[in-house]
Length: 481
Image (cartoon, one colour):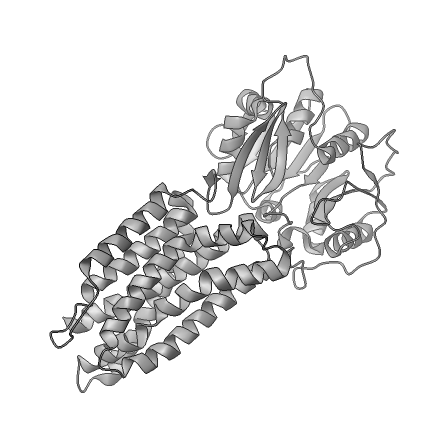
Protein backbone atom coordinates (compact mmCIF):
# COMPACT_ATOMS: atom_id res chain seq x y z
CA UNK A 1 0.00 0.00 0.00
CA UNK A 2 2.80 2.44 0.88
CA UNK A 3 4.33 1.86 -2.55
CA UNK A 4 1.18 2.79 -4.45
CA UNK A 5 0.52 5.83 -2.28
CA UNK A 6 4.02 7.01 -3.08
CA UNK A 7 3.46 6.41 -6.81
CA UNK A 8 0.20 8.37 -6.61
CA UNK A 9 2.00 11.25 -4.88
CA UNK A 10 4.61 11.35 -7.64
CA UNK A 11 1.85 11.41 -10.28
CA UNK A 12 -0.09 14.18 -8.53
CA UNK A 13 2.94 16.43 -8.01
CA UNK A 14 4.00 15.99 -11.65
CA UNK A 15 0.47 16.94 -12.74
CA UNK A 16 0.54 20.03 -10.53
CA UNK A 17 3.93 21.04 -11.93
CA UNK A 18 2.78 20.91 -15.57
CA UNK A 19 -0.53 22.62 -14.80
CA UNK A 20 1.45 25.38 -13.11
CA UNK A 21 3.77 25.71 -16.11
CA UNK A 22 0.93 26.09 -18.63
CA UNK A 23 -0.98 28.47 -16.38
CA UNK A 24 2.20 30.57 -16.12
CA UNK A 25 2.25 31.02 -19.90
CA UNK A 26 -1.44 31.95 -19.93
CA UNK A 27 -1.28 34.53 -17.12
CA UNK A 28 1.82 36.11 -18.66
CA UNK A 29 -0.06 37.07 -21.85
CA UNK A 30 -1.97 40.13 -20.54
CA UNK A 31 1.28 41.64 -19.31
CA UNK A 32 3.89 40.68 -21.91
CA UNK A 33 1.95 39.08 -24.76
CA UNK A 34 2.10 35.60 -26.23
CA UNK A 35 5.01 34.81 -28.49
CA UNK A 36 7.67 32.21 -29.08
CA UNK A 37 9.98 34.24 -26.83
CA UNK A 38 7.60 34.46 -23.86
CA UNK A 39 6.70 30.77 -24.00
CA UNK A 40 10.37 29.82 -24.38
CA UNK A 41 11.19 31.90 -21.29
CA UNK A 42 8.41 30.32 -19.23
CA UNK A 43 9.30 26.76 -20.25
CA UNK A 44 13.03 27.27 -19.72
CA UNK A 45 12.50 28.89 -16.31
CA UNK A 46 10.14 26.24 -15.02
CA UNK A 47 12.32 23.39 -16.32
CA UNK A 48 15.35 25.01 -14.70
CA UNK A 49 13.39 25.06 -11.44
CA UNK A 50 12.45 21.41 -11.86
CA UNK A 51 16.11 20.52 -12.46
CA UNK A 52 17.40 22.40 -9.45
CA UNK A 53 14.61 21.01 -7.29
CA UNK A 54 15.48 17.45 -8.31
CA UNK A 55 19.16 18.01 -7.55
CA UNK A 56 18.49 19.55 -4.14
CA UNK A 57 15.87 16.91 -3.43
CA UNK A 58 18.43 14.21 -4.11
CA UNK A 59 20.73 15.64 -1.45
CA UNK A 60 17.79 16.03 0.92
CA UNK A 61 16.62 12.43 0.40
CA UNK A 62 19.79 11.16 2.06
CA UNK A 63 19.06 12.94 5.34
CA UNK A 64 17.24 11.37 8.29
CA UNK A 65 14.90 14.37 8.61
CA UNK A 66 14.06 14.47 4.90
CA UNK A 67 10.29 14.03 5.38
CA UNK A 68 10.05 17.09 7.62
CA UNK A 69 11.82 19.24 5.05
CA UNK A 70 9.69 17.87 2.22
CA UNK A 71 6.49 18.76 4.11
CA UNK A 72 7.81 22.30 4.65
CA UNK A 73 8.67 22.56 0.94
CA UNK A 74 5.16 21.47 -0.05
CA UNK A 75 3.60 24.02 2.28
CA UNK A 76 5.77 26.78 0.81
CA UNK A 77 4.99 25.56 -2.72
CA UNK A 78 1.25 25.78 -2.11
CA UNK A 79 1.46 29.38 -0.91
CA UNK A 80 3.85 30.48 -3.69
CA UNK A 81 1.67 28.97 -6.40
CA UNK A 82 -1.43 30.74 -5.14
CA UNK A 83 0.54 34.01 -4.94
CA UNK A 84 1.93 33.81 -8.49
CA UNK A 85 -0.62 36.04 -10.31
CA UNK A 86 -0.37 38.67 -7.57
CA UNK A 87 3.43 38.73 -7.72
CA UNK A 88 3.35 39.03 -11.51
CA UNK A 89 0.89 41.92 -11.33
CA UNK A 90 2.96 43.73 -8.71
CA UNK A 91 6.15 43.42 -10.76
CA UNK A 92 4.33 44.83 -13.79
CA UNK A 93 2.93 47.72 -11.74
CA UNK A 94 6.43 48.44 -10.42
CA UNK A 95 7.70 48.96 -13.96
CA UNK A 96 8.72 45.57 -15.39
CA UNK A 97 8.56 46.11 -19.16
CA UNK A 98 10.15 44.83 -22.36
CA UNK A 99 12.28 41.73 -22.72
CA UNK A 100 14.30 42.42 -19.57
CA UNK A 101 11.20 43.03 -17.49
CA UNK A 102 9.58 39.88 -18.84
CA UNK A 103 12.64 37.76 -18.01
CA UNK A 104 12.88 39.19 -14.49
CA UNK A 105 9.15 38.74 -13.87
CA UNK A 106 9.12 35.13 -15.01
CA UNK A 107 12.14 34.17 -12.90
CA UNK A 108 10.97 35.94 -9.73
CA UNK A 109 7.38 34.73 -10.05
CA UNK A 110 7.64 31.13 -11.25
CA UNK A 111 11.15 29.84 -10.47
CA UNK A 112 10.85 29.40 -6.66
CA UNK A 113 7.67 27.29 -6.78
CA UNK A 114 9.11 25.25 -9.68
CA UNK A 115 12.10 24.35 -7.51
CA UNK A 116 10.01 23.42 -4.49
CA UNK A 117 7.38 21.32 -6.31
CA UNK A 118 10.12 18.96 -7.53
CA UNK A 119 12.03 18.79 -4.24
CA UNK A 120 10.04 15.78 -2.87
CA UNK A 121 10.52 13.63 -6.01
CA UNK A 122 13.88 11.98 -5.13
CA UNK A 123 12.71 11.11 -1.62
CA UNK A 124 9.46 9.67 -2.96
CA UNK A 125 11.42 7.65 -5.51
CA UNK A 126 13.65 6.30 -2.75
CA UNK A 127 10.63 5.36 -0.60
CA UNK A 128 8.98 3.60 -3.54
CA UNK A 129 12.08 1.53 -4.27
CA UNK A 130 12.57 0.66 -0.59
CA UNK A 131 8.95 -0.47 -0.32
CA UNK A 132 9.56 -3.40 -2.69
CA UNK A 133 12.93 -5.03 -1.89
CA UNK A 134 14.28 -7.11 -4.73
CA UNK A 135 12.09 -5.36 -7.30
CA UNK A 136 14.08 -2.18 -7.63
CA UNK A 137 14.06 -2.13 -11.45
CA UNK A 138 10.28 -2.36 -11.86
CA UNK A 139 9.78 0.09 -8.99
CA UNK A 140 12.03 2.65 -10.65
CA UNK A 141 10.22 2.14 -13.96
CA UNK A 142 6.86 2.82 -12.30
CA UNK A 143 8.27 5.92 -10.63
CA UNK A 144 9.41 7.31 -13.99
CA UNK A 145 6.13 6.32 -15.66
CA UNK A 146 4.12 8.03 -12.90
CA UNK A 147 6.06 11.24 -13.41
CA UNK A 148 5.46 11.21 -17.16
CA UNK A 149 1.79 10.25 -16.82
CA UNK A 150 1.26 13.00 -14.26
CA UNK A 151 2.83 15.54 -16.59
CA UNK A 152 0.51 14.46 -19.42
CA UNK A 153 -2.51 14.65 -17.14
CA UNK A 154 -1.48 18.11 -15.90
CA UNK A 155 -1.06 19.44 -19.43
CA UNK A 156 -4.49 18.16 -20.49
CA UNK A 157 -6.08 19.40 -17.26
CA UNK A 158 -4.67 22.90 -17.68
CA UNK A 159 -5.39 23.36 -21.37
CA UNK A 160 -8.78 21.68 -21.68
CA UNK A 161 -10.35 22.04 -18.24
CA UNK A 162 -8.89 24.37 -15.64
CA UNK A 163 -7.91 27.46 -17.63
CA UNK A 164 -11.01 27.54 -19.90
CA UNK A 165 -13.48 26.82 -17.09
CA UNK A 166 -12.17 28.54 -13.94
CA UNK A 167 -9.49 30.95 -15.22
CA UNK A 168 -5.84 31.38 -14.40
CA UNK A 169 -6.14 32.84 -10.88
CA UNK A 170 -8.30 29.96 -9.66
CA UNK A 171 -6.03 27.48 -11.47
CA UNK A 172 -3.01 28.72 -9.51
CA UNK A 173 -5.01 28.46 -6.28
CA UNK A 174 -6.09 24.96 -7.28
CA UNK A 175 -2.46 23.95 -7.78
CA UNK A 176 -1.72 25.24 -4.29
CA UNK A 177 -4.68 23.42 -2.76
CA UNK A 178 -3.76 20.07 -4.34
CA UNK A 179 -0.15 20.49 -3.20
CA UNK A 180 -1.37 21.18 0.33
CA UNK A 181 -3.52 18.01 0.27
CA UNK A 182 -0.41 15.98 -0.48
CA UNK A 183 0.70 16.68 3.10
CA UNK A 184 -1.96 14.22 4.28
CA UNK A 185 -0.02 11.37 2.67
CA UNK A 186 3.29 12.44 4.24
CA UNK A 187 2.59 12.00 7.92
CA UNK A 188 5.24 12.63 10.54
CA UNK A 189 7.13 9.56 11.64
CA UNK A 190 7.09 8.69 15.38
CA UNK A 191 10.85 9.26 15.63
CA UNK A 192 10.55 12.84 14.41
CA UNK A 193 10.48 15.39 17.18
CA UNK A 194 8.42 18.03 15.41
CA UNK A 195 6.30 18.70 12.36
CA UNK A 196 4.25 21.43 10.80
CA UNK A 197 1.73 22.72 13.31
CA UNK A 198 -1.88 22.14 12.17
CA UNK A 199 -2.63 25.83 12.66
CA UNK A 200 -0.02 26.69 10.04
CA UNK A 201 -1.60 24.27 7.57
CA UNK A 202 -5.08 25.67 8.21
CA UNK A 203 -3.77 29.23 7.77
CA UNK A 204 -2.14 28.27 4.47
CA UNK A 205 -5.36 26.64 3.26
CA UNK A 206 -7.33 29.76 4.17
CA UNK A 207 -4.83 31.95 2.35
CA UNK A 208 -5.05 29.81 -0.78
CA UNK A 209 -8.84 29.98 -0.67
CA UNK A 210 -8.76 33.75 -0.42
CA UNK A 211 -6.22 33.99 -3.25
CA UNK A 212 -8.30 31.79 -5.54
CA UNK A 213 -11.80 33.02 -4.90
CA UNK A 214 -11.67 36.38 -3.14
CA UNK A 215 -8.61 37.74 -4.92
CA UNK A 216 -8.87 39.76 -8.08
CA UNK A 217 -9.28 37.83 -11.32
CA UNK A 218 -6.57 38.21 -13.94
CA UNK A 219 -9.20 38.79 -16.63
CA UNK A 220 -12.76 40.10 -16.77
CA UNK A 221 -13.55 37.32 -19.24
CA UNK A 222 -11.14 34.44 -19.73
CA UNK A 223 -10.87 31.32 -21.83
CA UNK A 224 -7.91 29.15 -22.70
CA UNK A 225 -7.25 31.50 -25.62
CA UNK A 226 -8.26 35.00 -24.55
CA UNK A 227 -8.04 37.37 -21.61
CA UNK A 228 -10.70 40.00 -22.34
CA UNK A 229 -11.58 43.28 -20.68
CA UNK A 230 -14.38 45.69 -21.60
CA UNK A 231 -13.89 49.35 -20.76
CA UNK A 232 -16.57 52.02 -20.92
CA UNK A 233 -15.38 55.57 -21.47
CA UNK A 234 -17.41 58.65 -22.47
CA UNK A 235 -18.68 58.02 -25.97
CA UNK A 236 -17.20 54.53 -26.44
CA UNK A 237 -17.21 50.92 -25.36
CA UNK A 238 -13.74 49.41 -25.82
CA UNK A 239 -12.83 45.76 -26.13
CA UNK A 240 -9.32 44.67 -25.09
CA UNK A 241 -7.75 41.24 -25.53
CA UNK A 242 -4.56 40.67 -23.53
CA UNK A 243 -4.47 44.44 -22.97
CA UNK A 244 -4.43 45.14 -26.72
CA UNK A 245 -7.31 47.29 -27.98
CA UNK A 246 -9.34 45.20 -30.43
CA UNK A 247 -12.50 47.22 -31.10
CA UNK A 248 -14.53 50.24 -30.02
CA UNK A 249 -18.15 51.32 -30.52
CA UNK A 250 -20.57 53.99 -29.31
CA UNK A 251 -22.13 52.72 -26.06
CA UNK A 252 -25.76 53.01 -27.23
CA UNK A 253 -27.40 51.61 -30.34
CA UNK A 254 -28.15 54.28 -32.92
CA UNK A 255 -31.03 54.64 -35.35
CA UNK A 256 -30.73 52.34 -38.36
CA UNK A 257 -30.26 55.32 -40.68
CA UNK A 258 -27.47 56.78 -38.55
CA UNK A 259 -23.99 55.47 -39.34
CA UNK A 260 -21.45 56.75 -36.80
CA UNK A 261 -17.79 57.07 -37.75
CA UNK A 262 -15.60 54.11 -36.92
CA UNK A 263 -13.85 54.65 -33.60
CA UNK A 264 -10.40 53.31 -34.49
CA UNK A 265 -8.14 54.72 -37.18
CA UNK A 266 -7.07 51.36 -38.57
CA UNK A 267 -10.68 50.22 -39.10
CA UNK A 268 -11.45 53.56 -40.76
CA UNK A 269 -8.66 53.04 -43.29
CA UNK A 270 -9.56 49.42 -43.94
CA UNK A 271 -13.20 50.32 -44.50
CA UNK A 272 -12.29 53.26 -46.75
CA UNK A 273 -10.12 50.91 -48.79
CA UNK A 274 -12.87 48.25 -48.96
CA UNK A 275 -15.54 50.82 -49.80
CA UNK A 276 -13.41 52.07 -52.69
CA UNK A 277 -12.35 48.67 -54.01
CA UNK A 278 -15.40 46.41 -53.66
CA UNK A 279 -18.58 46.16 -55.72
CA UNK A 280 -22.18 46.32 -54.48
CA UNK A 281 -22.49 42.67 -53.44
CA UNK A 282 -19.08 41.27 -52.46
CA UNK A 283 -18.36 38.09 -50.56
CA UNK A 284 -15.66 38.90 -47.99
CA UNK A 285 -13.65 36.61 -45.72
CA UNK A 286 -12.53 37.97 -42.34
CA UNK A 287 -9.78 36.02 -40.58
CA UNK A 288 -10.17 37.23 -37.00
CA UNK A 289 -13.56 38.34 -35.68
CA UNK A 290 -12.38 40.70 -32.95
CA UNK A 291 -15.16 43.21 -32.37
CA UNK A 292 -16.88 42.31 -35.67
CA UNK A 293 -16.60 46.01 -36.58
CA UNK A 294 -15.73 45.62 -40.26
CA UNK A 295 -18.18 42.79 -41.03
CA UNK A 296 -20.88 44.92 -39.42
CA UNK A 297 -20.00 47.99 -41.48
CA UNK A 298 -19.79 45.96 -44.68
CA UNK A 299 -23.24 44.43 -44.21
CA UNK A 300 -24.73 47.79 -43.20
CA UNK A 301 -23.39 49.58 -46.26
CA UNK A 302 -23.73 46.75 -48.79
CA UNK A 303 -27.19 45.14 -48.50
CA UNK A 304 -26.18 42.51 -51.05
CA UNK A 305 -22.88 41.63 -49.37
CA UNK A 306 -22.05 38.43 -47.53
CA UNK A 307 -19.36 37.92 -44.89
CA UNK A 308 -17.64 34.96 -43.30
CA UNK A 309 -15.91 35.75 -40.00
CA UNK A 310 -13.46 33.15 -38.70
CA UNK A 311 -12.86 33.70 -34.99
CA UNK A 312 -10.94 31.07 -33.04
CA UNK A 313 -12.44 31.85 -29.62
CA UNK A 314 -16.22 31.61 -29.05
CA UNK A 315 -15.77 33.74 -25.93
CA UNK A 316 -14.86 36.74 -28.09
CA UNK A 317 -18.16 36.41 -29.97
CA UNK A 318 -20.14 36.14 -26.73
CA UNK A 319 -18.47 39.23 -25.25
CA UNK A 320 -19.18 41.20 -28.44
CA UNK A 321 -22.84 40.16 -28.33
CA UNK A 322 -23.05 41.32 -24.73
CA UNK A 323 -21.16 44.62 -24.89
CA UNK A 324 -20.84 46.01 -28.45
CA UNK A 325 -24.36 47.07 -29.43
CA UNK A 326 -23.97 47.68 -33.13
CA UNK A 327 -22.10 44.45 -33.85
CA UNK A 328 -24.44 42.55 -31.52
CA UNK A 329 -27.45 43.85 -33.44
CA UNK A 330 -25.96 42.75 -36.76
CA UNK A 331 -25.15 39.28 -35.39
CA UNK A 332 -28.69 39.04 -34.02
CA UNK A 333 -30.30 40.07 -37.34
CA UNK A 334 -28.26 38.17 -39.88
CA UNK A 335 -25.50 36.17 -38.18
CA UNK A 336 -25.34 32.45 -37.65
CA UNK A 337 -22.73 30.17 -36.15
CA UNK A 338 -21.77 27.65 -38.81
CA UNK A 339 -22.56 24.08 -37.85
CA UNK A 340 -25.10 24.87 -35.12
CA UNK A 341 -28.17 25.65 -37.20
CA UNK A 342 -29.31 25.98 -40.79
CA UNK A 343 -27.06 28.25 -42.78
CA UNK A 344 -29.18 31.33 -43.27
CA UNK A 345 -28.14 34.95 -43.02
CA UNK A 346 -25.41 37.11 -44.46
CA UNK A 347 -22.85 36.77 -41.64
CA UNK A 348 -21.42 33.31 -41.11
CA UNK A 349 -19.46 32.98 -37.87
CA UNK A 350 -16.99 30.12 -37.81
CA UNK A 351 -15.22 29.34 -34.55
CA UNK A 352 -12.00 27.82 -35.82
CA UNK A 353 -8.34 28.60 -36.39
CA UNK A 354 -7.99 30.79 -39.47
CA UNK A 355 -5.28 28.65 -41.05
CA UNK A 356 -7.33 25.48 -40.65
CA UNK A 357 -10.32 27.15 -42.27
CA UNK A 358 -8.20 28.29 -45.20
CA UNK A 359 -6.84 24.79 -45.67
CA UNK A 360 -10.27 23.15 -45.61
CA UNK A 361 -12.71 25.55 -47.29
CA UNK A 362 -13.75 25.25 -50.91
CA UNK A 363 -15.64 28.56 -50.88
CA UNK A 364 -14.42 31.48 -52.98
CA UNK A 365 -14.40 35.15 -51.99
CA UNK A 366 -14.10 38.54 -53.64
CA UNK A 367 -11.86 39.96 -50.89
CA UNK A 368 -10.32 39.04 -47.54
CA UNK A 369 -9.29 40.86 -44.35
CA UNK A 370 -6.50 39.38 -42.22
CA UNK A 371 -6.96 40.85 -38.74
CA UNK A 372 -6.19 38.02 -36.31
CA UNK A 373 -4.15 38.60 -33.17
CA UNK A 374 -2.80 36.68 -30.23
CA UNK A 375 -2.02 39.30 -27.60
CA UNK A 376 -0.32 42.16 -29.47
CA UNK A 377 1.01 40.13 -32.36
CA UNK A 378 -0.19 38.06 -35.29
CA UNK A 379 0.04 34.26 -34.84
CA UNK A 380 3.09 33.06 -36.75
CA UNK A 381 1.23 30.49 -38.84
CA UNK A 382 -1.01 33.22 -40.31
CA UNK A 383 1.85 35.29 -41.77
CA UNK A 384 3.68 32.85 -44.01
CA UNK A 385 4.04 32.46 -47.75
CA UNK A 386 2.01 29.27 -47.60
CA UNK A 387 -0.89 31.01 -45.84
CA UNK A 388 -1.11 33.89 -48.31
CA UNK A 389 -0.64 31.60 -51.30
CA UNK A 390 -3.63 29.57 -50.13
CA UNK A 391 -5.56 32.78 -49.49
CA UNK A 392 -4.86 33.99 -53.00
CA UNK A 393 -6.15 30.73 -54.46
CA UNK A 394 -9.62 31.29 -52.95
CA UNK A 395 -9.81 35.10 -53.06
CA UNK A 396 -10.15 36.69 -56.47
CA UNK A 397 -9.73 40.30 -55.37
CA UNK A 398 -7.84 42.40 -52.83
CA UNK A 399 -6.45 41.24 -49.51
CA UNK A 400 -6.20 43.64 -46.56
CA UNK A 401 -3.88 43.04 -43.60
CA UNK A 402 -3.65 44.69 -40.18
CA UNK A 403 -0.40 44.30 -38.23
CA UNK A 404 1.01 45.86 -35.07
CA UNK A 405 4.74 46.43 -35.36
CA UNK A 406 7.49 48.98 -35.17
CA UNK A 407 7.61 51.23 -38.23
CA UNK A 408 9.56 49.21 -40.79
CA UNK A 409 9.84 46.34 -38.28
CA UNK A 410 10.48 42.66 -39.00
CA UNK A 411 6.84 41.62 -39.03
CA UNK A 412 5.80 44.40 -41.41
CA UNK A 413 8.81 43.71 -43.62
CA UNK A 414 8.19 39.97 -43.76
CA UNK A 415 4.50 40.27 -44.64
CA UNK A 416 5.21 43.03 -47.17
CA UNK A 417 7.76 40.76 -48.83
CA UNK A 418 5.19 37.96 -49.05
CA UNK A 419 2.53 40.20 -50.57
CA UNK A 420 4.83 41.83 -53.12
CA UNK A 421 5.88 38.36 -54.21
CA UNK A 422 2.27 37.32 -54.79
CA UNK A 423 0.55 40.50 -56.00
CA UNK A 424 1.57 43.17 -58.50
CA UNK A 425 -0.04 46.00 -56.53
CA UNK A 426 0.66 46.54 -52.81
CA UNK A 427 -0.03 49.61 -50.68
CA UNK A 428 1.14 50.23 -47.09
CA UNK A 429 0.24 52.86 -44.49
CA UNK A 430 1.00 53.25 -40.79
CA UNK A 431 -0.79 54.81 -37.87
CA UNK A 432 0.51 56.76 -34.86
CA UNK A 433 3.31 55.14 -32.84
CA UNK A 434 2.33 54.11 -29.31
CA UNK A 435 4.38 54.23 -26.10
CA UNK A 436 5.97 50.86 -26.93
CA UNK A 437 7.21 52.12 -30.28
CA UNK A 438 4.64 50.22 -32.35
CA UNK A 439 1.88 51.22 -34.72
CA UNK A 440 -0.85 49.71 -36.85
CA UNK A 441 0.76 48.80 -40.17
CA UNK A 442 -1.94 48.34 -42.82
CA UNK A 443 -1.35 46.61 -46.13
CA UNK A 444 -3.56 46.21 -49.18
CA UNK A 445 -2.57 43.82 -51.96
CA UNK A 446 -4.48 43.33 -55.19
CA UNK A 447 -4.21 41.73 -58.62
CA UNK A 448 -5.66 44.98 -60.05
CA UNK A 449 -4.42 48.55 -59.50
CA UNK A 450 -5.53 50.14 -56.22
CA UNK A 451 -7.22 53.49 -56.74
CA UNK A 452 -5.87 56.20 -54.42
CA UNK A 453 -7.93 57.21 -51.39
CA UNK A 454 -8.95 60.84 -51.18
CA UNK A 455 -7.76 61.13 -47.56
CA UNK A 456 -6.32 59.07 -44.71
CA UNK A 457 -7.45 58.87 -41.08
CA UNK A 458 -5.82 61.36 -38.73
CA UNK A 459 -2.12 60.62 -38.03
CA UNK A 460 -1.99 57.94 -40.77
CA UNK A 461 0.57 58.20 -43.54
CA UNK A 462 2.12 56.04 -46.26
CA UNK A 463 4.63 53.55 -44.83
CA UNK A 464 8.10 53.05 -46.23
CA UNK A 465 8.89 49.36 -45.71
CA UNK A 466 12.36 48.08 -46.48
CA UNK A 467 13.05 44.75 -48.24
CA UNK A 468 12.98 41.83 -45.82
CA UNK A 469 12.90 38.05 -45.68
CA UNK A 470 9.48 36.55 -46.39
CA UNK A 471 8.23 34.25 -43.63
CA UNK A 472 7.54 30.59 -44.32
CA UNK A 473 6.06 27.76 -42.29
CA UNK A 474 9.61 26.57 -41.67
CA UNK A 475 11.11 29.96 -40.77
CA UNK A 476 8.35 32.12 -39.42
CA UNK A 477 7.62 35.09 -37.23
CA UNK A 478 8.57 34.69 -33.55
CA UNK A 479 6.34 37.41 -32.11
CA UNK A 480 6.83 40.51 -30.01
CA UNK A 481 8.14 40.58 -26.46
